[in-house]
Image 1 (cartoon, rainbow, N blue to C red):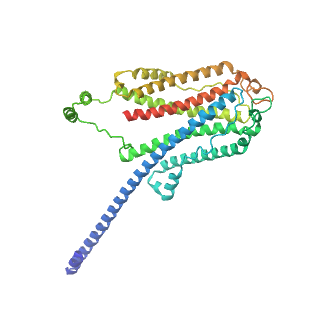
Image 2: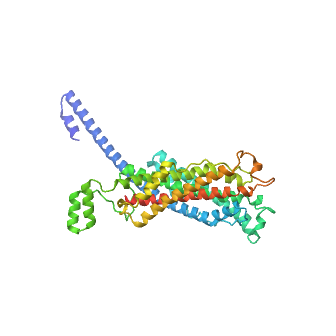
Image 3: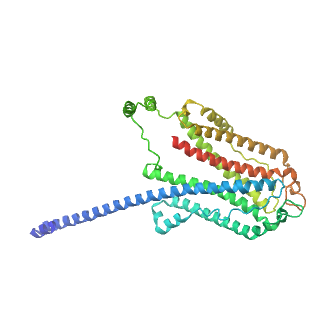
Length: 423
């Protein structure tokens, strides 16, 4: 309005034109400023939405990891291990139906709700694809589990009062063709549960890293208290006020220039490397060795036992694990809870034990399996899909080793989180 009045009061055309230009510039700047403010407000709202979505997804995937891991353990210990141990040994275990509705507690609604509301628009495309990939595999597992339940309900439950021989071929420890789906389904569901549990953990870590990268702070529980790096003066003041011997120790460590021992940092980094190695080895063992053999064996296709060339720990890694076990007894780890210290030591010893078992299995396959393993008659009796007695140990050892690798991977993953908390 002021510019308009001034413009009308000016008599010369050139001056009036200049004031009109100034008025237009002023209006443009005002509109542009309002646009910038609105844009800043939108960006702030997007960041807030992204923070809420990432937090919700991390919490949800934490639940997925726990639920899938629990379901995997229950299926393995209650059904998979007992059945496969007996079946591969030539016994006739009863094909017990798995619990009905056992996967019903896994809720996939949060992702569908975010898709419908458009909330995932604040996430990067790569992150959306990774999360979507998990839910696709989760849905595949739920469908597989449902088919297993339906087959059990229609084909096994009505025959629960029969003798176990009903399910097997005459004079054979091989399931009848009508029930061979049980072996394949039980193994596939168990393997899928373990893989999906690991995938949930990996996806949760990716989401947590995205949160930390975007907002500069970690996702913490309500009971956790963030610890800032205290200055020497602050620590001395606390020591005077509280008379705490622990803060006196912190002052000494601050004077030395390091509050955490380099040995602990080195231990933490190598423990993470070993955890990754175990996880990758477990996945590779399943996909390259165990799954192809068991899938074919359960379908009566007579797969040939192979001379294993699978490598787990390298010589330098074995040596380093031994150094880490000894390091846990040093003064640097006295600040850790005794239970955590013991669990870390046990996990490393279990790692060495598992590696020895794998080496023994590899040696056994090279000593017993013939030099020309492609001859089917060397492993199977004529007109039989059961391995000869001298090779019946092979599927059992594969199953036990695969299960041990997956259990050790989960053990290292849980202890890695406890170790992160301590640091």
